Image (tube, rainbow, N blue to C red; front, top):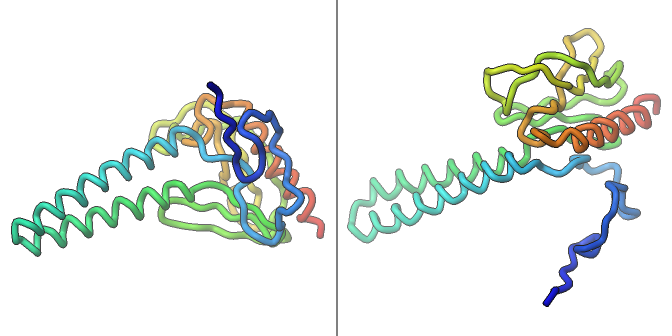
Length: 182
């Protein structure tokens, strides 16, 4: 028996392209693509591990060792914070500029300080690890600085999803073309 599930912006079964909804505010920061399965899966495993650490901390509290329990709770909070930060990583755009959110750093540039956005063939890091493979990268050419890699087709969002990478790169380039001249 099929159950009709609805999401906030469309029916579950409806096939829609990634078009902007009429109520989207271009002044707010938004990621023009969905997080990939590798990123979401890693964050889910971290959250599962955090739940086990919290349960261990609760057992340690009931055993009477408050110091050990506080260490477990701090470790659990660090795992939750890491999972949330992992889910926030990526390229974010708004009318004001482009933001590249990394695990530890965030770089924000206004559109008027960017020269070009291009998709190039180059060695890219596989899942953010030191190993490099030949792939595509969306790079942001900045005024007076080295190019900044925003997206790659081998990162946690687009590994084995080339169509999603092309769609996301085209969307970010469209945002740049629209607001770079404004």
